[in-house]
Image (cartoon, rainbow over all chains, first blue to last red; front, side, top):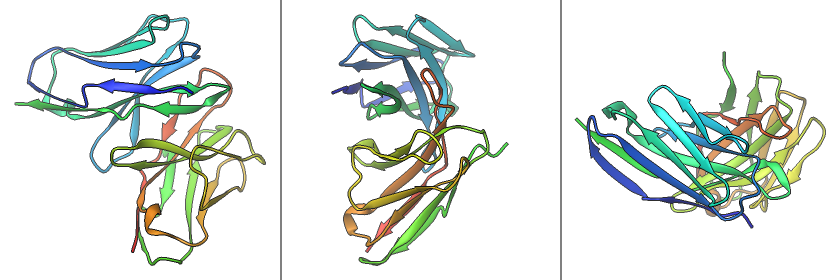
Length: 113
Length: 113
């Protein structure tokens, strides 16, 4: 059974700091890993999708890495801004059903002005 | 570009009442999903539909039924609502096949009293 863990559960940083969010998964036989952002009371917005053959994916100030062999992914946010405050979730496909995602419980990020 | 649209956004039901949550996507996606999100539990898959005409159970299907009305629409029905079904419900879609990105609706906040 695939399990996804995100540590820490919450993180508070001052504006301008670079930060890393962590995601680990128990079964490395994944097709991809997806990072989402969720604002309070809102739905999930896809940030980055990393294919299993990729090591990194970048979008603006965001960089996601994937190490399948160790079952880990990181989301790097450069020069954080108050607008980055949100909950960040990672998700991987369930074993035997690649379209069904298993989610971590998320990291709640607060960027203080 | 609407993406994934859910209705209603908010709903209060009395125990035993029934209701249907509606979801529609305009991205020509084959696969659609219903998740629920609860504090401390994260996102859990209720039902999914890999393609038009097919549906399958997810992690927490009890108390729910679904209908894939056509390629665009995927509805979730609560036949006899219970307080344990108080949650935020999200519909999502993906193009299907392996290595595809999931897109989410804005959610339906349901309270059962």
